[in-house]
Image 1 (cartoon, rainbow, N blue to C red):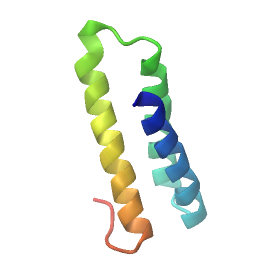
Image 2: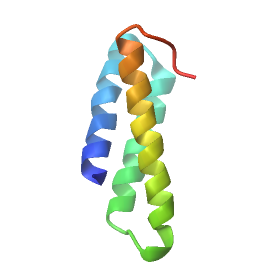
Image 3: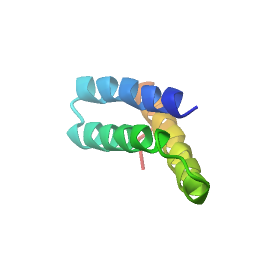
Image 4: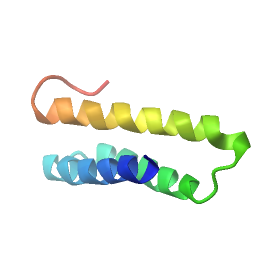
Length: 75
């Protein structure tokens, strides 16, 4: 799940870059790197944090997808 989510973020980076949205590129890249960094050190005390990161990532990718289809802005 972690690798798949990070991969989806990285794919969204390409779309954001093509759209010329530098801030979104930076946000997506940072989140993907953070998630990949967490994947090597998931301990019982940080599972909730990783879960929240994954939820945020999925929401961001979903927002990017809707935006690229022209159905709304990211808020």
